[in-house]
Amino acid sequence: MPLELKRDPKSGIWQLHGTVAVWKGGESHSIQIRRSTKTRDKGQAEAIKRQVEGEVAERNYTGREPAITFAEAAARYERNGGESRYLTKVVAQLGKLRIDAIGQAEIEDAAFRAYPDPTLSPATIRRQFYSPALAILAANGQRPLVKRPPDSAKRTYFFTPRKANELIESIVGMRYRNPWTPALATFLFGQGVRVSEALNIDGRDDIDLEHGYAILRDTKNGEQRTVTLIPKVLAALSAVPNLGKRGPLFLRYDGTPYESLTDENRGRPLRFWTHHCATIGLDASIYTPHTARHSWATWFHAQTHDVVRLKEEGGWKSDEWQRYVKSGYANLGRESKRLGWDFGQKNGSGSDSAESLQAVR
Image (cartoon, rainbow, N blue to C red; front, side):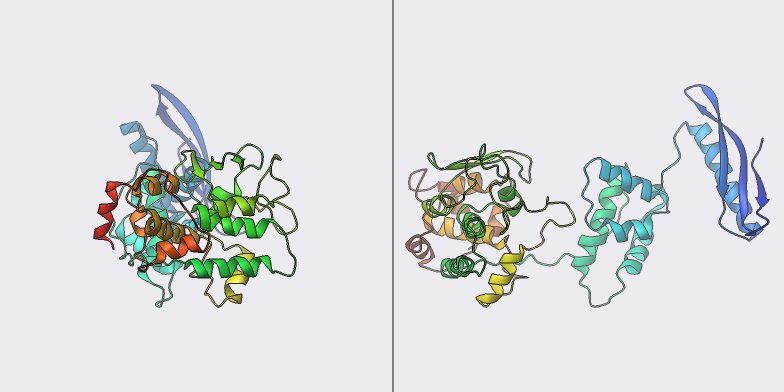
C-alpha cells in the first residue's frame, strides 16, 4: 500500500506507515515502513513523507542506495578500525544528517555547537572536530571541500640528560619501590620508543639482553622493528623479575599489566611519570612520556650524527623525524654520553645524510 500518515491518539505525533517497492538486482522488493516523523505538525509530517517517497524514487531511478546518516557512517568507520577518539561530540552534532548533505556550513555550525568556548584555539577545534568528521566522510566515499581552522605551529620539548637522570632517580627513590617503573622510564629515554610500543613488549619473545635487542611488534605504522639496547637500558632491564616470561615486560607498581591502550586513553600520561615530574619541578603536561622520544632523538643525533640509524631505530618512514631532533647545545652529545646515555656508533662515523639537518638546526 502507498505511504500514509496516521496521528498517534496519545502523543499526537504523526506516524508514517506503508509499503514501498524497491528495485534491486532487477527485481522488485517490498519494504515495509513504520517510522515516526517526530512532529505534531501535519505540514512538517507531509514534508517528511514526500522526502521518503523521493528517496525511494531516486533509488529506483539511479539504482543507488540512499545515503546513510553520519551516525551510521561513524559506526562503520569504527568497525573498520578508524580512530574513535573525539567522536562523541562529532556524532552528537552531525549524527542525524545524511553524509551527502554535509558540507562547509554544516560542519562549521556543528563545530561551534560542540565547542562554543571562544578561548579554545582553532587548532584544537581542527584536531578534535574537523579532522575526525572529515575522516569519517572520506571513509564512506564523501569528500566535501571544507576549509579547516588554521593549525598551530608544532612545539616540541626535550629533557636534558641531567633532568632525565634526575627524574629516574626520583622514581627509584619512590615510597613503594618496584623494578618496573625505573626500567620503563630508562627504556623510554634510552631507546626512543613510543609508550604503546614499550608496553606491548613481551617479556619472553620480544627481548634478549644477551644479544642486546628488543623487538617492537605493535608499532604506529604497523611495521615491526628491532632496537639495539644501550648499556644503561640493559642494566635497568636486568632487574626486571619477569624477564623471560610470557606477558607484558613492563608492569605497574603492583605487578599487574597496564590497561590496554585504546584511542580514548592513548596519550594519557603515566601516573608515576606525572608525579615525579612535579617532584623535580617540571610541568608534566609539557614533559610527557612522549617527550622522552624527542629527548632520545635529540641526544642521539648530537652524539652520533647518524641520521640513517636514527630513522631506523626511531621507526620513521617520512621526514617527521626532523621535528623530533632539536639543536640542543654545544656539548650535548658529550654530556649525554658522560651521564650514561651512550648510543655508540653502529654505522661508522655517521651518515652523510646528516647534512640535511642543517636546514632545521
